Amino acid sequence: MTSELALAFDVGGTTIKGELVDRSGAVAHAASAPTPPGREARAAVAALGRELLARAGTRTIVGAGVVVPGIVDADAGIASYSANIGWRDLELVDHLETTWSLPVRIGNDVASGGVAEHRAAAHDGIEDLVFVPIGTGIAAAVVSGGHLLRGHRGETAEIGHLAVRPGVRCGCGGDGCLEAVASASAIVRRYTALTNRAVDGAGAVAARLGNDEAARTVWTEAVEALADALTAVSLLVSPERVVIGGGLSDAGALLLDPLRTALGERARVVTAPAVTAAVHGRRAGVVGAGLLAFDGWAVEA
Image 1 (cartoon, helix red, strand yellow):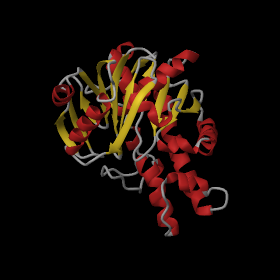
Image 2 (image 1 turned 120 degrees about the vertical axis):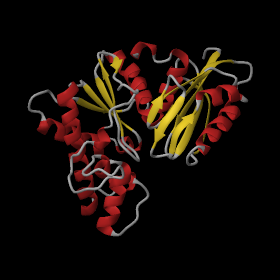
Image 3 (image 1 turned 90 degrees about the horizontal axis):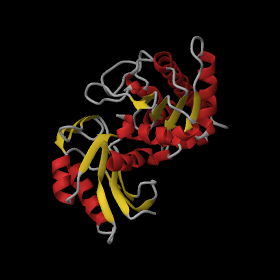
Image 4 (image 1 turned 135 degrees about the horizontal axis):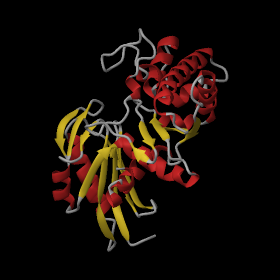
């Protein structure tokens, strides 16, 4: 492990994950905390960062990378909007730099996971992939020709709001959004509505696939909707690989095998992409945050 470390944070809708990492991604120290609502999240990140820095001892901390959901104005150092956490125009960089006495870079959490997964896939010669974390919501980061594709304000691909199932209302106010059918939270809601039985997460629904017809119905609906959305993405950017991350990726073959089949059935014009689970699992965002601190995602810019 090298002497230089970076502070890396992934601020999720439920949990803040923080790590001190070296350039190889090895973790020296890690900590987490629940994500408070709204602007209180900034204070929670600052406090967790101070806790981690106190563990660094004499090792050099080169900077910090902080990735957050929603719209990010990285140049201004502002988290512009997050529906899941409930902030708007939250200044991050100046506050955290003052608190930690470190240079701080910020970025989008899905883009961060996409960069981390591309760096891992590049060892296999993969230059075109789509990273799709599935949890409370669904989004995507598109890497094409080795470069992270970003919108004019740095947005990632909000595929969770592609209309795939008209008649299903989404929290965004739209009709038929993928996120309202295939996210982990949507799977739980749908199963509970069908059975009137509460379950502790989408993983519990997956665990019942062998002997529960309602679980199989909900799971199939989610996989088919996800395949429809990813087929549309494939027609636009033709990725070689789709990488599934987020909490739902813990289902492993129960999700990946039927998704591969469904994508293959829909392939008419372009070749169906390979489908894999994220190399970094739920850590993809925080791994990318460490890379952001060390090199600013320079290769992907």
